[in-house]
Amino acid sequence: MVTKERIWELMEEVFDPEVPVLTVVDLGVVREVNLENNTWNVVITPTYSGCPAMKRIEDDIIDKLKENGIENVSVELVLSPAWTTDWLSEAGRRKLKEYGIAPPVAEIDKSVLFAEQPVVPCPKCNSKNTKMISQFGSTACKAHYQCEDCMEPFDYFKCLK
Amino acid sequence: MDSALFEYLVRLGDDSLILGHRLSEWCGHGPILEEDIAMTNIALDLVGQTTSILKYAGEVEGKGRSEDDLAFLRFEREYRNTLLVEQPNGDFGVTMMRQFLFDAFRKPLFEQLVNSSDAQLAAIAEKSLKETKYHFKHSAEWVIRLGDGTEESHERVQNALNDLWRYTDELFFENEVDKDLESRGITFSMDELKKNWSDTVAQVLDQATLTIPTNGWQHDGGRKGLHSEHLGYILAELQYMQRAYPGMEW
Image (cartoon, rainbow over all chains, first blue to last red; front, side):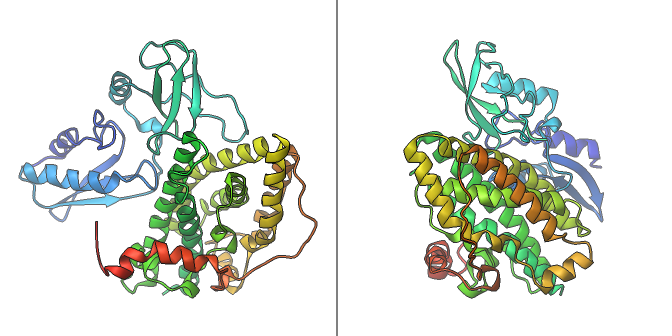
């Protein structure tokens, strides 16, 4: 008998294709798991509207469940409530930093133009003497920063609320 | 079928589709690497929003058309985007001005639509608003930086404003479709939106030391399917693969 807990455990083995240290559970992309008419329905939500990883995540979830003998599976994409970086797990935040990506700190004040940037510590040397290079980075969910002490350029997983 | 809602979704989706495509033309041509990446990031958000919007439009229509069918297999006259978003990229100043005039409209629009009585439209707005706030901040800051920058950047971005201003009234185009949707609480008053837009635009342009053109003459047509010559060229590129290899998939 497959339990809901078992499905959640298996979700912990599905990784984000763009930030492969994070599982889809760490990321907060998997919202619900429900048994409906003999089919396990996994509810996911995109981080960004144009996130190219969503289709891949959907396929990976189905593959993972089928590999484990769970045949009747569906994946449902919902937009609301909209994903926020607050759903990133504590484990996820730690794994991001170890991987060299600074985890989200505070949201930049988008209501004020030229607002001050939040202080993002360098994931390599922990210095707070860093600067934002660009609000838009290598993927939709990241901004581009540089450490002014160790000079390391790094990705910042930008805050989205 | 709810034909008013379908028409409205196609307008919303086509604005993001065509602007997203325009921005993607900058890929590999940005003035600096960071801006190349920023413009393509924003293009990706817009095309992503298009996917959600046109997918829903296809469901509302109920004829089995997918988001891809709507994006790739309609003819020019069936597109409902405003003329503003199909205007050529020009230099970086033109692109940022076009983006700013659009973002200043789109942000308060999504802020309204979050409260739509249509649950799926509200969900799309909730998701898109978070992204649009970043876009607005980016384009508004560039308009100020360029306007209040050097003599040359000021002149170029002022020229961009002069050229694009005549396409801004169309953002607030209304007909019986809007009246119908407003009466059902699906969409909201354009008057409020226009006031919000005008205040934001006046404030940012003032800070950018730019002058709003006094010539009040305005174009329209896009919302009725009557486009400038530019859209045909965009579609020739956008639709090439599906026209040359019908039904092909990644």
